Length: 463
Image (cartoon, rainbow, N blue to C red):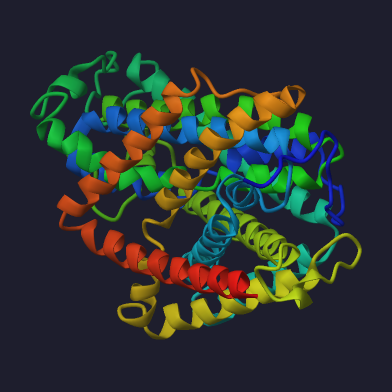
């Protein structure tokens, strides 16, 4: 097993331009995206009010994974984050596989975010072609990422602040409606809504526990994005302390925002009142009587998409740079200028442009296959994080215990429980007709990357 580096280890030639406030807000806002504002409607449709339990289960799983990742990143900060940890814990094949899978995931998702943001912008300015908006977004955020890293930090700080502020305001307005301070359309008398919508329309679990499980499958991927915090921590002045504070502050608040939002949505209105294709947040704000609710949420979703695009471009560039540092990607990507790995940024955005073109031209064929191929990759990455933490925690405790500034709860029992939970999600995806294609395509993509890693290992062994 590769050695754990000594205290103070840092081989990163990157800038340390990110501040604690950047990292903290990135932790809070990085995971809040269109998956919550729009995608939560699909979860409510299959689980009813039980979606609250679905989010609680999925959020707890994500929280445990982030605690493990935070422990390793605080002890061994690196721009490659979990890819570096996997290599130290299980060997080159693991770091290669985790890093390339995550990079592929980010650059494909870039296309979805850029296209979705362009669709919203096209509604506001229909005279501008959708492809022009995509080009504008990609160029703007490429330039932002090519400049000093503090520019990325500032972009994300204000993007995240808007998203967090929107959720807090929504929770306040929803709570006032529940207690009758604001009227909901289903209760013009002004009396408190109470819990009637949680128990009516088929009860709290209208589709039983099967609906809750289907809800978990629908929402678990909405928690992806927190991993970027541990990648960004390597570019702060005190990476170990910064990532510890960011992870501690983020995980519980994210869980509160997600679960709290769902509780407000299914309490203010009957779950059957949600409309297909319309954000549940818009439905609730319309019911409360907030003027131009649809436009307001369009703006929030637009910002959320651009924020995710910016964060994913940053994360993908740092991941491929880390792979190049370890000889797992072309060495030409190691060129650093002004503390920024500009060639790594350009390589990531180049593939992002290709993904966007595929999404615009062949959304139901070529791009759909690519999207399915990364559909379950996040779960594979989470599994590798848990497996790495199991091995590295004991080694760090034995050799350099002073590095453990942040510790996983109830180790190793909760780590094993998390791995078991991920296995259960995989099995459920196999048995779910809608989720099965994503899992099978993702398994194929993972097998392909593992095969390349195996060939490299064999070649190096022969040498």
